[in-house]
Structures are given as C-alpha cells and as structure tokens.
Image 1: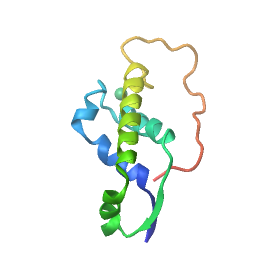
Image 2: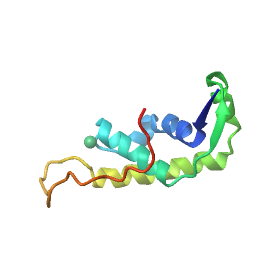
Image 3: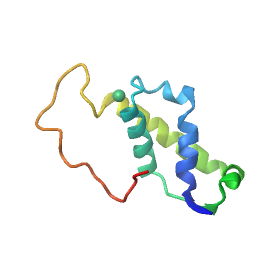
Image 4: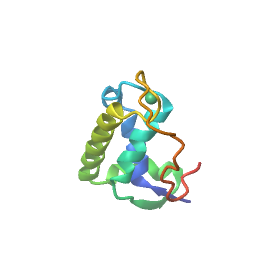
Length: 110
Ligand SMILES: [Zn+2]
C-alpha cells in the first residue's frame, strides 16, 4: 500500500499526450517539469491509498471534472512556460543572478 496523489498521477499521464506537449516549444526536462509543477500547484491534491495494480482502476473512477480541470491547468501552464522559460533562451535577458532560492515548499524529492 502507498499513499499517492491521484491528481499528480493523472496529470503526469495526461501530460504525456503529444497533442498537449505541442503547446510547449521546448521539451527539455526543465520545461516539462515546470509545466507539471505549475499545473499541480493550481490543482487540489487527492490522496488515495492504493496498491500499484489498482491505481489505474481508481483513476477511472475519478470524476470527469477533475480531468478537465487538469487539462485546463496543463494547457495554461504550458502556454505560460513557453513564454517564460526558466532557463536561458536565445536572448540573454538576465537581470541579476538567477540563483535565487526557488520556492521549495514540501519535499518533492523522489
Ligand atoms: Zn526548456
């Protein structure tokens, strides 16, 4: 048994959709992760205890509303990140050190 955030599980699955990733011009890990993190910050977590084998069964029981919420947040996050990539892009517009401590609330280390 494990405690999982079903919102995160579902968001990760949906974010693999190539149609969705088309919104993002840069597919480096940083940008991909940024979109996922931003979307998840805007979505309520839904924790469930589950065996890994039953995870996908439970996902199917989730309300369609959650899927559309996740889709909306992923779309918005992808559009935002595509215009505000965290890493240096073609134009070096760095105004000051970019080693500012990022928000690190909660341990999300895997
Ligand atoms: Zn990138």
